[in-house]
Structures are given as C-alpha cells and as structure tokens.
Length: 292
Image (cartoon, rainbow, N blue to C red; front, side, top):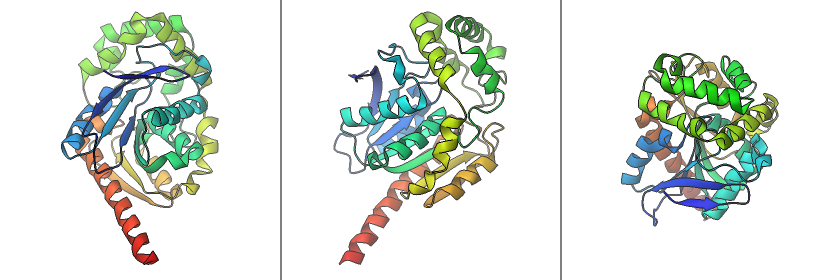
C-alpha cells in the first residue's frame, strides 16, 4: 500500500481507478476506530466506472503508523492534514465523501478549505451538537487514557458480543464481525496508536461542529446526503437538518441502513457520488451557456 509523508504524519492510502479519469478524484474519509476498508465496496464499483478513488487511513485509532506531530490530533488539525494530503497527492476539485466522525471532519474541511472541494457527499455522521452522540460520549471517556483504550479494545476484539454491543459497533452497522475485529488490532498491538487515540479523544468536544454548522450555508457547491433511516445515533431528523443548512443539497433516504451506509447499502453511496458529479457537470454546462 502506498504512503505519503506529511509534516504531521505518514499516511497510508489505497487507490483504485484510472489515473487519467475523466472525473474529479474521489477522496473518502472514515471515522474513529475505522480504516479505509469502510469504503472498499463503494470504491471498487466506482473504479470500474472510471472514477479515481483515494482511501487514506487517517490517525483515528485504526492507523498503523503513529503520528509525528500530536498537535494535529484535533478536529482542526486533522482538517489541515486532509488539506495537506490533497495537496501532496495533487488532488484538485475533489469529491469529498465522509461517514460517521469522518463526515464531521468533512464539514470542517469545507468550512476551512472550501476551494479544495468541488462537491460533498455525507453519509450518516456527526453534525451540530451531535458530536459525539450518546452512548459514545461514555465510550470516549474511556478512550482518554492509553491503558484504558488497550484494555477495552483487547476485550472487544476477543468478545464479539461486547464488540457488537451499543458501546461498540452494534448501533453502526448490521454485521461485518471480522472487519470490526481487525479495526481494533492497531491499538491492541501498539501503545503509540493508543496514545494517538487518547490525545484525540481528549480534544473532541461538541463545540468543534457547533461553530462550523453556523457557516455551512456558505458552501454553495453540490452536497448529497445519503442517510440510513435505521440509525439510532444520527437519526433521520439530523439528516434533514443538514439538508436545510446546505443551500445546494439533496437528501437520499436509505431505508435499511444504519450509520455505516457504505457497508449496509454501498449502492446508495455509489449512486450519490455519480449523481453529485453529474450535477456539477450540468451546473458547469449551464454556466458556460449563460456566458455564451
């Protein structure tokens, strides 16, 4: 797997699709205690359709290379890291796609660095004051120390009922036991990864997204919201609130999906990415006709 060394950290990433794609690059952002594999099914299908898909594993607890500059382990710092990653990989006019905590990060990116993003796709994610949602407010309390993280993650890796309890992945997705087991491995095996996650957990506060939410109306490029309707964390109402904030937004309701829509219903995310790119092309064409 290729990797890129930034000032803050070395980031591994996975790439699918043609280098000479006719579409803008698609950059996928995952959430806490997840890696690039959240997006594999979506990216493989898009790559077959000609999209260039970039899936980094960010320092959010399932990464394998510890961070060099731990100051970056905050939402503002991670948004800057994502911008620097786009610059390092020469990704322009990006289709930015986020889920769960990664969707919250995408909101910070379009707030801080809107010129780097051509369009946005969000699956169920943190927003407004829902950061983090209950019961993960309690889980994050346990993640504030490296020792407690390692103890908790070792237990969750070994015990499927605990791993897929409401304090683990039960509320997020319908299945995928082997994948969720793998996501605990980095913290279980490397105390430096536990340190990174503990620092980040201490930095996360609801105010990170509350302030950003007051400025999301300034992002006027196309936004598609792909919202699982069975999600008890990021409920359908939260998706409708985000739809109302973004001035150029489309909400797609996914009846049987929970938080991890890319796993539960990858086709809905694929469809949204294809449609948001089509809508951008139509807007460009309309603007060209108007100038003529």
